[in-house]
Image (tube, rainbow, N blue to C red):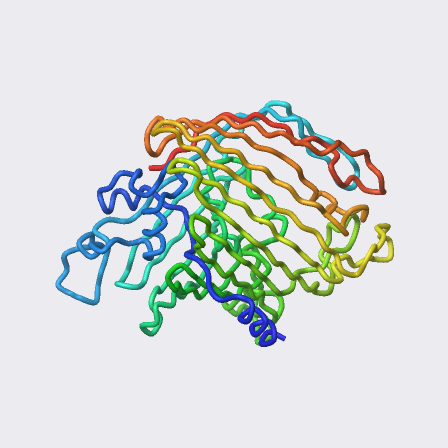
Length: 432
């Protein structure tokens, strides 16, 4: 099965990307450069920043930034490479928490979301071709008391002198298209979250051929949260499994620069957990085949204006698994849905960046199933203004408009678009 998927994707894809991790002030410290060298407006990358990322996050003089040790096989950074990013917001919004089963609601029209996020980041080259990158989250969305590692990978950029890059670790599949960590809006690229193409554990191979690029990867497909004790050989074994099935998700992207426009074709084939139980909240006892195809476009209107478009088509085969007490109807054995986003970033000067982001998704066959997956439907417009006090410190104001009609409960459970998603957000985003 895996070999057939590999053959099919290799036939339809020829080349791809450079993985876009979040650039950090540590690079500015190491190479004694302004953040403006890599960023048109933090955290958005400019052309040089994209080249730096594609060069495995190092400059030609990287060895000069290591300790002067008389050992050509040791390249230690001359300081511990660390950086911090922090975000704090206050938000007024119309949405509320609605319990899916009972309908109980919690509402707060104004909300102090501070700290919203605190990250510790690190990256450095360890040899001419080997680089690591990771960040840990100390607080996010009100979750305190634990550290979560998201991006965490090691990359070798010239396997067997073929210019093929090999990356192993945790990363976002969606980084092949538009890295979420580099967006200027607080609002997310929602279709990536809905399609589960964000953080996964796996490997990636990529290669550039002039204006054409190719990437091909395998990931677990079950995210980065779970692992399982290997307890069948005996008691208290230290080993753990990071996957809960034998299948892997195969994905790839073909990218090409066509004049002023960059075009990308994306595909993924694999498996995911099925859904069962009340409102589809529980994990079923079988795997569901998942297939995703997508197209992305990006370009510049002028030197200070850029645009980007993404659309994904999703098929979840045999996804909803009814139990003896479930009430949702099965409209089809295969569930098709689609969605995407359109964005524009405008940087009129060194102090301001203005952004617009339109998110759209249609739940398709998942509509009227009385499950949480009816909530895939989205139709919002986000407008953001960022003011830069310094290169690495900005204030933002953002407003989100919701164009979907508010729905009433129509089934046994409280699912669908029951509240509006209007919000006004003000806050700070700093990195140092």
